Amino acid sequence: MTLAAADVVKLVQSVDWVAIAPPTITALAALLVLVADLFVPQRRKHLLGWAAAGALALALLSLLPLLGDDRGTFCRRSAADSCSYTADQFTLVVQVLVLGGALIAVLLSVTLLADDAHGTTGDTGTRTLPDGEYWFLLLCSAAGAALLPAARDLTTLVVALEVASLPAFALVGLKFGDRMSAEAALKFFLSSVTATAVTLMGVSFVYAATGSMYLTEIADALTEVDGQFATLARVGVVLTLVGFAFKTAAVPFHFWVPDTYVGAPLPVTAYLSVIGKAVGFTGLVLVTVLAFPAHADVWGPALAVLAALTMTVGNAAALRQSATRARGAVRLLAWSSVGQAGYLLVPIAAAAYPAGGADATAHAERAVGSTLAYALMYAVVNLGAFAVVALVARTRPSNRLDDYRGLYAERPLTALALAFLLLCLAGLPPGIVGLFAKVTVFSSAVEAGLGWLAVVMAVNVVIALSYYLRWTALLFRRPEEAPAPAASVTPPAPPAAAPAPGAAVTATTTVTTAPTSVPPVAAVPVPLAVAIVLTTALGVVLSVAPQLVLRFADTVLF
Image (cartoon, rainbow, N blue to C red; front, side):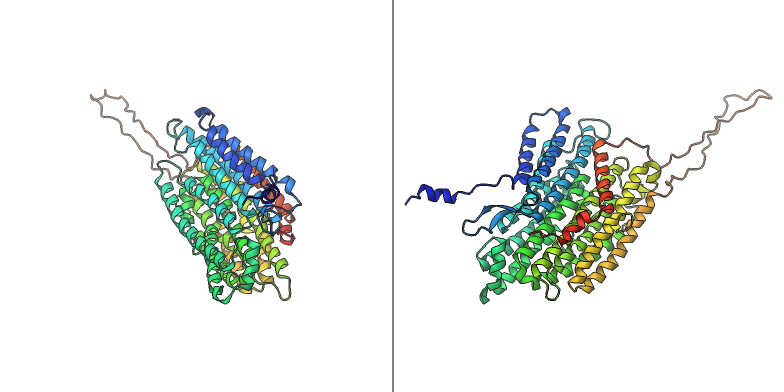
């Protein structure tokens, strides 16, 4: 039996290329950069990095036609609201965060690959990072991260999650000959694969209980699940959340973070701390608020407990970081990111507890808006902090916290930028945007009746103040100098013959002093300078007008 021409036309969908432009441009750029790497001579490889930056800027510009208009594509003919790809307000905000964060990571990477090309001694034969593969993997991961917020079925959601994650494994371990990098990649890979397997099992259970993969259809089906499938559905909900909890570095799924962040190249660490975390939180929001509202009694308490554990463990570990430990600055930011993940989980947990008589959908959207507002603030200031750390690491490879002592005397503007960014993370003036973002998250817990979680958050904010202020204070202290050894005196050589009577013997004294521990000031590479200036300027603008991000707490997102 053959289909009539009209029936065939009905089965063919038109693709909304404008809606899918951001991830599509990024994915195509990844392929073009990989192919171009075969033909670009070694001395021109740096152009690949600027091509990647241009592609991400173009992907950001492609979001402009989508403003103020919800669009969907790859939809079911029988149900117009069941689409695999939806470009709504939530999607656009997360795509701005992801693509903008990836652009900053590219600027950091341009400097890293340029330094790697010259080696530590200017020898161009000591490369440890391949250009084409690096940019290909970074852009592929960014394409998956840009696709994920638009996914509205579990299949697309899992595929986007893996497209964002798999290249990240390779980026962590891409540095040739670095044992720490290889170990970090292995830990990251094994733990992530395990979490993915658990998530896929959960997705299969949810599909078996509901018969659909579309988030909106799952939400409707879970309200009427037969008694024999109720337990299966609940188990599927829990298992599905495990993978996204891993991506957010929520305790106890955080164990990969410190070693991975320390072992990875610094731009990759910055990328994971923001874009990797955004991927996890985006998936968590989609499956809880859109797909599983009927089981809020399951994921609500679970996420509240995870939020409390995550912020407590992260801040306590950051507080214990030694100022003399190698790569201590990166470790502190790693544990700080775990603590910040706890704050981001609070509004999502609060979405399960609408205030008495309040509309559940409106309450959930306000809670998600609080998470987005905090995520935008965190992305800007955390990427800026990593940009400064990358700059300092060029002259102080050990990257201890003590290496930042007296940074103001050496680089006043850089020290002021880092101090401002750390104060934003701490939520202290003049970092007003950090303070307001924390108040927004705190308010979401109070409005949901989670008073105990609000108290835990308040205690953790105070704990975090100590290590952020300790690092900030180091920037303005006097540089430490190595203690000078006692003067060494070289005695004269015995004369070959007795001197004539009355002749004077002259002793030669050589005094050796130790140089100061502050290395000479080097020029700031242009890409690093752009990254620091851009993130700091955005932080200042948001602190002057925090409503630019806080307004998302009252915006209709879905």
